[in-house]
Amino acid sequence: MSKPTTEMAGVMIDPVTGEIIDSKELAERLLAQAKEQAVSPVGPCGHAVAES
Image 1 (cartoon, rainbow, N blue to C red):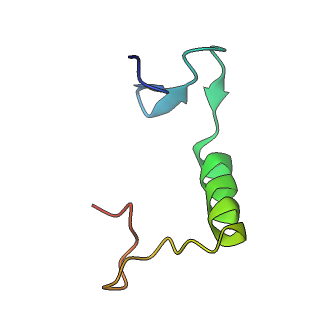
Image 2 (image 1 turned 60 degrees about the vertical axis):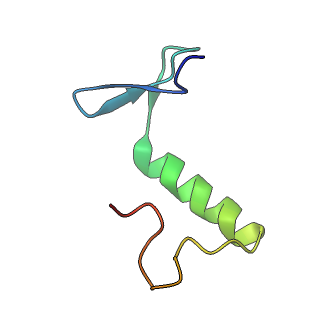
């Protein structure tokens, strides 16, 4: 199974279409979807879930 995106030098490329993915736009879309579905992007300790 292939990865959904390929990252090269900080640029994400859609492996199906070959288009460059705007990471800021993607993050904004995912945040909007999370809000619509009442999913919190913040974990129980107050840290962002995707934060490492």
